[in-house]
Amino acid sequence: MKATTATEKRRQQATDPKAVYTTGQVSKLCRVAPRTVSKWMDRGQLVGYRIPSVKGEGDRRIPRDELIRFMKALKIPLGELATADTFAVLTVCPPAAFTDSLAKYLPPYAGYTVTAVPRTIDAGFVVGAGGIDAVVIGFADGRGMAVQLAARCREYGVRLVVGMVGDDADPADAITGFDMLVRQYSHPRDVADRIAVAFDAKKEG
Image 1: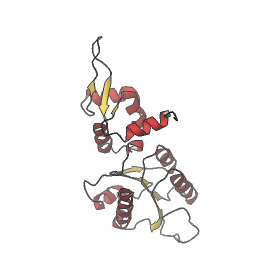
Image 2 (image 1 turned 45 degrees about the vertical axis):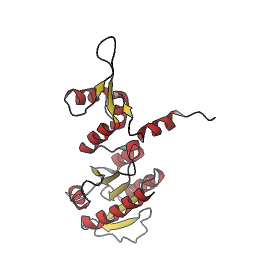
Image 3 (image 1 turned 60 degrees about the horizontal axis):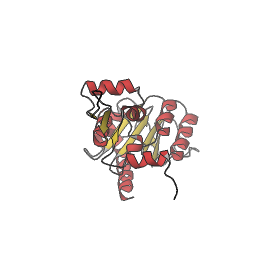
Image 4 (image 1 turned 180 degrees about the vertical axis):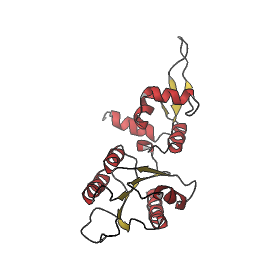
């Protein structure tokens, strides 16, 4: 019988509704120091419990559902915790107020999270962490970087990659790697509609 690898065990835990996490595991998922996780719990922002210990207070544990709730509230990408009932959207170099406007046009309480990063290079790290379903890429850092990010999105299984080209660009001008190209100041509703379609496809498997 083939032994279960550490990666496979982690993936199984990520989809187990009864799973619990240590502060070390949470720190890796949220990309912060373990001490920060402890501070979140001390402040009541992140709810968990301590396991019994003969020496006093035991190690902390955080239930999966509570961790997901917390990460959504802080707009932290869920990474490997993402499921068919969630859809993580990342906007990169978005025009002013675009991210907030986009979120307003997505169905409320439907499992969407929308996060913005100001630079293309930062987005590459977020995509690489996994769990991102759709990326909307502005071209503020240049076409070359946008195309490279689109390729990285494909590598990590992003379902929908949207490019937001400037008004002086021709959307059909040899810009490849995107599922959809829109003008930089297009109405967010157009992008939201396409995202909703991609979410439905994810839920259908």
